[in-house]
Image 1 (cartoon, rainbow, N blue to C red):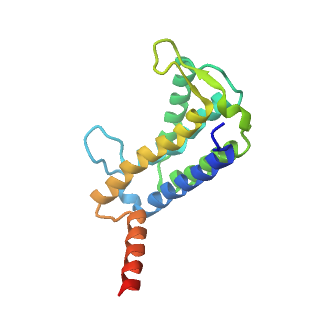
Image 2 (cartoon, rainbow, N blue to C red):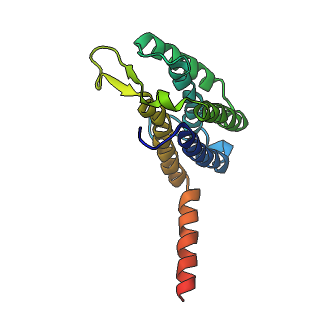
Image 3 (spheres, rainbow, N blue to C red):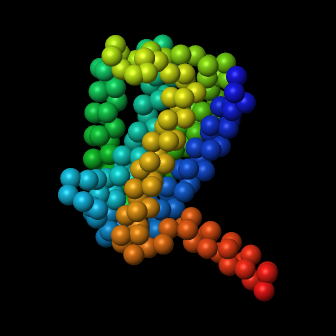
Length: 180
């Protein structure tokens, strides 16, 4: 279909989740209540949200539903919100990031290749009216990357340099040292 397999989805998701976990570990627990603006999620709330939202895709794609409705979506959101709210410590959040992330990665690892091209319909009036399972599964990773970018800005606001920036700085310093 497109050369990108279920195994590729799982591998790339594991990379994204590992980076999210590193951020969660680097931010001190006393900073988990930090909010970058009034009305926004705190560091801890953002991480708990990330940890719980991987549950939605298997609800749709496990049984290979061919349409999504608002009731299913609302049920998933309510469940994820309740579970995220129960995560009150850094340790609980990191454990959920690990376990829920690996559950989702294993789901992707075993997802049938032929199912990636199947189309799933959305409720009337939504645009686009349908998407491929591949695009929907990929959107779980995109969703996490969106929130991870927010967390990286929060790290900067807290005076931390993100691990990805530090790694790039180290590589650049090595290249410069080799040139000297």
